[in-house]
Image (tube, rainbow, N blue to C red; front, side, top):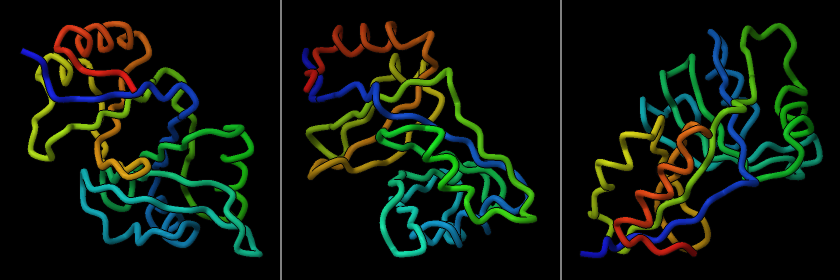
Length: 163
């Protein structure tokens, strides 16, 4: 039986982890998303703007722990420049913004919104982040880079279609 899933590997995407007692407050003031209203496991799309209102980065931000831990998925660019832009207005804030190097992003598009993700796939997954790319709502799976080949094999075995 074929699963009704489409997926796309996102090799150009990278992941930041933002932690610290001022993480939520700082991201709330630095991005276009109401970060402080996000509860655990909620996500939102956010922009990071310069002083002229020009976009320096777009992120899907997942609240791991309100106020103190967030994950930011960026769809590309130079990770160091994006990190520098995010931290441009950090003065005395107590937070750490680190690039998570050992992760991969796979975007899953279920053909039906109530279709559950296969358990075999969730065994590899660190985080499931609701995300819309283009017109298709779906989820970003954050997977350890060492498990990427296994996750792609599971997707192939269940008949998921690569886009």
